[in-house]
Length: 278
Image (cartoon, rainbow, N blue to C red; front, side, top):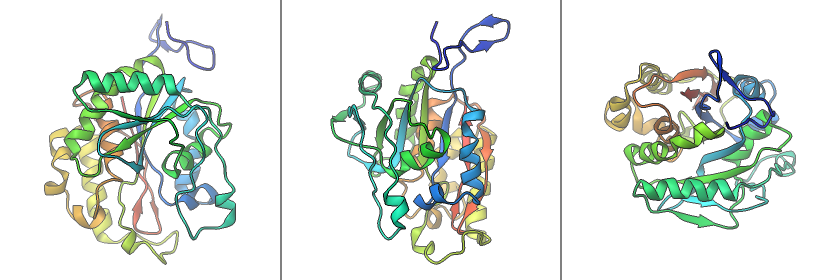
């Protein structure tokens, strides 16, 4: 029987058995989130470890790693990538020295290949802020092995859901499949906004539609989000920050409603919703 990193088996009902970890989608927002304890999403992520069983390892799907085909990192000691500019020195000084998970990366790669997906590997890819921003808040000890998986910005929602579906067996082994992106993401409208500014109607209409579709389990509608969701293109001029949500969705049980874990906005434009897929 698989054992969690705490050393204690999880229990389901009266029989000692390990229930699958949920797959998660986290909105990581701006890198500044790591330095803003007053932000609602910061506080949520600080409490995330109390909401989810401690994982044996983490497979993080980051919007900030784009490749033609799914790619996985084999790095044994992933470097902390500061893939941004114009932020305070304290942000560039942050490190997240978690151990890598090359064995998990190979296992995930085998599952993707079995599903007919082309897979590549990187021996040097570190952790970009899509991964380390939420993880430095949720598991600050940086002692859980982690590997990253890329997104394919030129592919569609169905592709990323299929990637997640191929990875679903990892949840049974205590692996946290964590998509990290942003529920809304239009940086052309982001600059200069106050952190607590009220979101405009075009953000709330999109977020409300997506949130309802997710919590009602309307997966067919979600795959057609570009056509059905109001203000879809304005909230996601490019889709890479939404694709991790679809990988987490695919890793969950088919046609099962998502659980809303958190909802807030950052600087009016970034919806910071987080979901669990059981």
